[in-house]
Length: 280
Image (tube, rainbow, N blue to C red; front, side, top):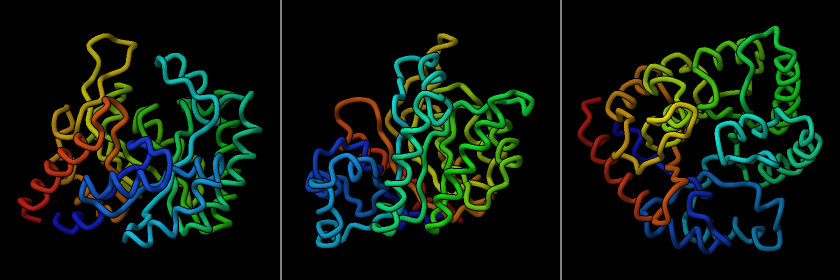
């Protein structure tokens, strides 16, 4: 498992940067030089972010992956994100498609080859009218990104691994993969992260290193926690990654608390110790 150590990266949005220099500063504080990059600022505020590639190069920072959001998402509750999440809502699809056409060009210019996003709550039943709609929209996105040599990763959590597997088999687009977030499986209470990883393993091209605990109140969010302090069984998780011969990207992600640099640095220590002590 020591082969994973050089691939550890940080998700830029976790650090809430206002400019590229913020990212450089925080990456140095954490002790990593690889980045999964939020691509939305390059579309929203290019005057600030167009300077990022040169600054990253000067500081030895490598981009390993990207991310984009869908507009109008409301994560206040599980009910609100079910309604507003991803490319499901008709009211935001036109704007999301417009944004995607800009983002894919920025990703190509930056040399990013793997990008993840939340597709939204995928219908579990192929007879559901929304099933065909979602297949069509994700296929449209997938082929746009394929034209630029980019793999599109659907982030886990908003459905069970079995439902995601069935959807991907039906979709059957060669450049659509999975960005596996073990904490999201717990936050949404959609199944054991290790067992779920094995179900969708052949599609997994990216992993978020994030931890969480399942909610004690059904119908509400679980609690996101610093890596190593939640319910993800990290030794078993990395063993499963070994078993599926994972060769993709990693990104430490922290979306709660106001000491994110410290939390990611502590999580890095946990994962580094685990990987160095592993036998494989």
